[in-house]
Amino acid sequence: MEKIKLLSLVVPAYKQEKTIVKDIENLNKILSSMQCKYEILVVVDGFLDKTYDILQDLTSKIKNLKVLFYEKNHGKGYAVRYGVSKAMGDVIGFIDAGMDIETSGIGILLDYMLLHDADIVIGSKLHPDSIVEYPMQRKILSWGYRAITQTLFGFSVRDTQVGLKLFRKKVIKEVFPLLAVKRFAFDVEILAVSYARGYRKIYEAPVKLTYNWGSTIANFTSVSFWNVIFSMLWDTAAVFYRLKILHYYDRK
Image (tube, rainbow, N blue to C red; front, side):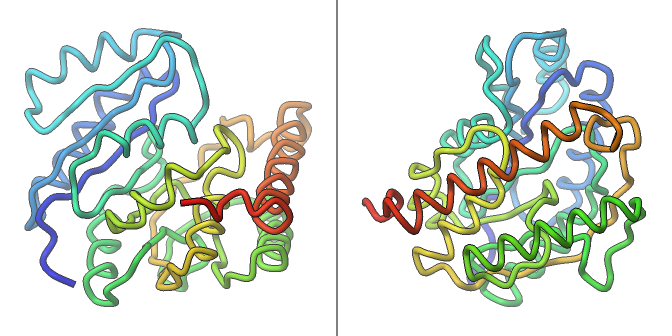
């Protein structure tokens, strides 16, 4: 693969007024130390707090920052798709806001992209060099979900859910307009459709991840947690139905 000319990184932001400045400043610091040009596209997923106003002030300090927005919340999948549709890079990716994922991992993913001439590189908690601490219940759920996705879709990716992924531009242009999931199972849909359309050079790279114990998904006794699990399984089944039964993703 040729040297990367421009890296576009999309950051979906949902109610991030408390952390967004630190998040973007840290991200900009890491990207500015790399050997390629870059742009940061933050997508404000609904006007639910002051995230947009804070980001507007930040654009005067960070020239590589672009702020995209819409008034109503639509979910992570929608936000990422909206962001990548505006991206100009020859490598385009996304990273979750909140920065539970150490931003220095972006450089490692880029190295993998160049080394393997990859179509897609994803952060993975299960890479042997990853540094991650998360509870046994979460590990069991991850194992179960991995078994489901590998059985349904045939790819050998071990961890589909880390919110850090990079794609070659041709994958973005062909695959992302076909996607349907707006919220849950969005990451799985990307990988399943990409794999089905012939993009088999998918590599997992190590990440350093600090687990957010205050998140909804961390509370195993809450109704919200089990609602999320059900929604992920439902959306995953819907992706399988569209892919294998309807052949929805076969269209140009």
